[in-house]
Length: 440
Image 1 (cartoon, rainbow, N blue to C red):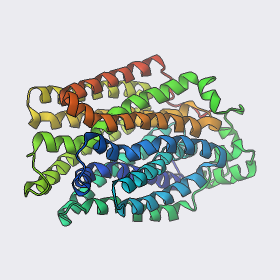
Image 2 (cartoon, helix red, strand yellow):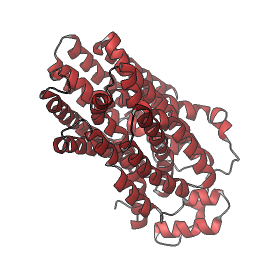
Image 3 (spheres, rainbow, N blue to C red):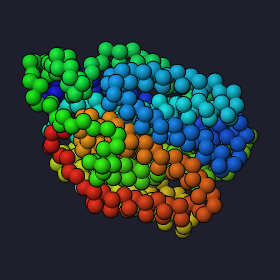
Image 4 (spheres, rainbow, N blue to C red):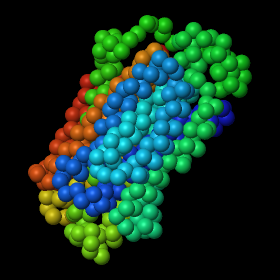
């Protein structure tokens, strides 16, 4: 398994699976949204954005709080509680009785989803060897794209079987069983040896390290910095690291979630007939739009595969800059085709955007925080960066449908391209390359 032991791989898989389920649950709403609109008779663009963004908004405090808790109470405990709550919130969303209850449950579910980001990334980084750490962290985060693909496929199948407005309830429920199963397996996951050592629990750290490596190992290799740090140090001793990890993530998620969640809706409006739910073509249009979005989402997987292949060769910073510029090109293509009424070609822009976002910033913004911050601040720093990202995602989800409705799709995509370019500039100004370096 590429230089790692069976127990390291098991730990990685349990962490990565949570990222997959979070991606699944976060993006399943993109397919369910038009059905929710029809079922609850929602017509306002603002309400559409509110429903689509409720979980993303919840991820803002979720990532921040779990980052703090994981640095204080350990990675293992928070990771187990989080995935169990994901199953519970999936059930609650499926039985929502009105728009208000669904909004509340989706927000709470977003808190749980956001919590998964820092704890999974931190645990993986702390148990994997430094020379292949980037590949394994990116590989785990690629499960988000797998979750998105599966969400698109499952939602299409559900819509094919249950050809009715209430099919969105089965979509919301579909994550419950795998979440509960993963929670059972996570009960036996081991704590991070780096965190145990930082707490002064040397004997336990030694035992876990021996378990992970399958042989006696010295704690010297995982000593790291012994600084006494607090949250405020993110803006004092580590302010450049904070800018590098938080600002690009914020800018990237505006486009990733704004475009990603609304790709089916954009395709329905631009490529397919505009018909009410009662018409025969409504479900067929949604079915075809979901299938087109599923095709575009396949390139998210390809982007991650290319990142895994090149992240230890080219480095994090170079890939992040290339990815941001590729995102700008992809959104510019969508704008160009929309401006010239060539809507049948817009899928090309979405495909290129998906490829480049995962080749670069969607993977590297998840990776960099666990490498630039020390053990005492690792989960906190990642949680803060992730919460900034989800704040950007919230803006994208809430305002993209309103902006597209008010100013037009072409102008909205041009703004997305400008934001991506700014992300590349910030990355270059604050660059800290962590390829092949030991954790602090």
